[in-house]
Length: 27
Image (cartoon, rainbow, N blue to C red; front, side):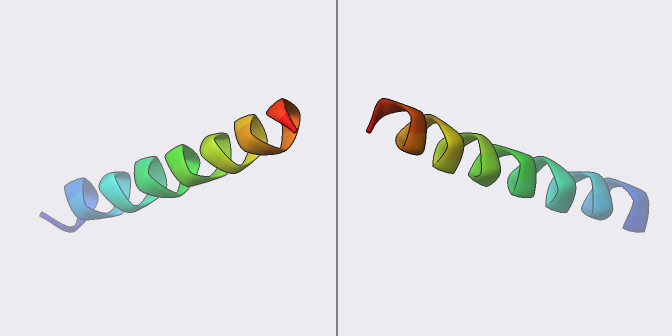
């Protein structure tokens, strides 16, 4: 299902963004 795939992509992107933000904040 493309919807599930799209959701996964958004979730992965959000996770990466959150990780970068946490790393930047930690520094």
